[in-house]
Length: 154
Ligand code: RB5
Image (cartoon, rainbow, N blue to C red; front, side, top):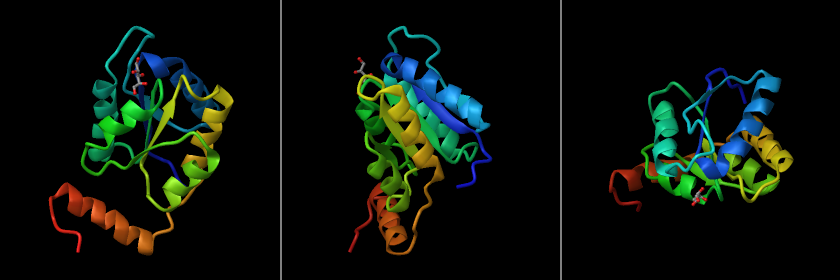
């Protein structure tokens, strides 16, 4: 997957250390990113940072985001309330690939208290390099938009 736009990345305190490790990886790979906070390990409210990064995707500044909190779950819950955001909380390689292939996920959520750094970085690598398959999966993504607009699915 081509990634010319910066990855929108954000965390709360529970994901802060892992976010820095992911940024080190991205820098080493020459993958541009923009960090939407938080900026220290001090206690922070994850929905604030989830929304900041998601807004960058909605505006077209970024195509993809990475959100990190303690479990990745709160970030994914907050992100999936935003229109056009398909956030997946992953802890295994298969899910990181399949959520791109079948769900066209545009945000990867990771748990800084769940994942070792090397595993998380591998999930980022897989997520960013896995293509969406389209076809019948695109029809299902279209259903997400209908849900967002309170339309009937059938
Ligand atoms: C913060 O303590 C923690 O609740 C947060 O990082 C995240 O795990 C929530 O889902």
